[in-house]
Image 1 (cartoon, helix red, strand yellow):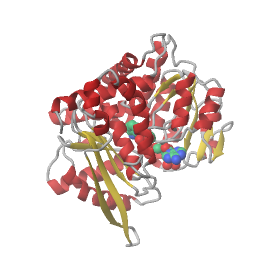
Image 2 (cartoon, rainbow, N blue to C red):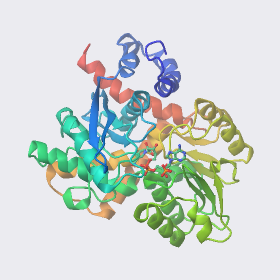
Image 3 (cartoon, rainbow, N blue to C red):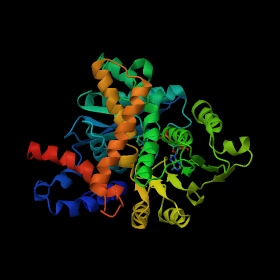
Image 4 (cartoon, rainbow, N blue to C red):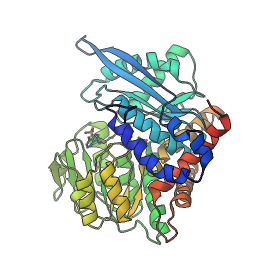
Length: 435
Ligand code: NDP
C-alpha cells in the first residue's frame, strides 16, 4: 500500500493473489529468493500520455491515456484497452496484473498488459469516437507491435473502436500486421472472438459442475451487464438448457421470471448494439418482466450467478444475499467483480467459485489464436475454433483443480488459478536471472 498510494484496486488484486502465493512459496525458496512476486507486482513499465481531440462543436478536449506493460516473460504483452470514465492508473494496473496470471493460465505464450483512457464514449457521435481513437493511437503506436505488445478491446472498446484504432496504426506505420486482436473478420479478425469470453465462461461453469457430476441443464442463472461478455454468456446458457433470469446495465437490472429466451435475447442484442438503448426498455416490451433502477440482480433467487459487468459489482452484502438464497456457483465473466469481502465469503462457504482470471480467459485465448492466424495469414472456421475454445477451457479447469484441490473432493479455484498462473511466469523469470 505504501508503494502504491491511492491505488485501491491494484492493492486489492495484489493482496488477493499474494495470500495464495506466499504460503505456497514457503516450501519453494528459489522463487522467494528471486523476489518473483515483488517483481510481478511492479509493472515492467507504464506509459501515460495526453490525448487531445476535437468534439463536434469544435471544442478541444483533453483526456489521459495509458498502457501498462506488466510482464512479458512468456510472450508479448497482451490485454485490452478500456475507455470509461472510471479508468485510472490503479484500475489499469490491477487489470494488467491479473491479465499476466490469466494469460499464463491459458497455456499460450502471452504476457500481460492493459491500457485505456478516462474518455467516456457514451453519448459521443461516430465522428467523435473516430477522432478520439485516432488521437489515442497516434501516441500508442510507438509502444506496441505484433511481437511486443498486442492490445485488444475491453469495456467501451468494441469492433467500431478497434477498426478506428487499427486503421490509424496502419496509416501511421504503413504496415498491415497483427498488432491488435478483436478485429472484424474482413481485416484479419478471428471467428469466434466476440463470443469467446462469454461462451468460455459458461464452458468453465459446465466443467465445474461436471466435476461434481452435475450439469447446467435446468439451472437458473443471474447475469449482470448487457455488453459483449454478458450477452454471449446468456446465449450459451440458453443453448446448454439453463434459464437466464436477469441482465443489467449501469442504470439497473431487468428480471424476467419466465426466462430470457433466444428470441428475447435477439431483441436485447438489437436494443444494445443497433439502437444503443438502455436495458430498462426490456420491461416495457415484455409483460411479466420488471426493471429495478439503480440496483444489482444479486438478491434474486437462482442457482448460478455470473457477474459480467464490471469490477467490485458484488459487495459483502450482495454476497451474503446470494449465499442466503443457496447459490450453487459464482462464475466471474467480468474482471474482479467481487470485492475482497465478497470473494472471502464465497471461498469460506465452499461453493463453486470461479475467479475471472480462469473463467473469462476464453477471450484472450481466442485472441492468442487470432495472433497465430494473422502470423500464418490463414483463417480458421467456427467449428474448429469452438472446439479449441472448449479444449482450452477444459485445460484451464484442470490446471485449477491440480493446484486447488483440497484432497476431500473440494476445489479452491481461486487458489488453483493463482498458483497455476504464477508458476509458469515465475519459471520463465527464474531462467532469465536477475533482470
Ligand atoms: P461492455 O462494454 O461490452 O459491457 C459492459 C457492460 O457492463 C454494459 O452493459 C455496462 O452498462 C455494464 N456496466 C458497466 N459499468 C457498470 C456499473 N458500474 N454497474 C452496472 N453495470 C455496469 O464490456 P465487456 O462485456 O467487454 O466487459 C465486461 C467485463 O468483462 C469487464 O470487466 C471486462 O474487463 C471483462 N472482460 C471482457 C473480455 C472481453 O472479451 N470483452 C475479456 C475478459 C474480461 P452500460 O452500458 O450502462 O455502461
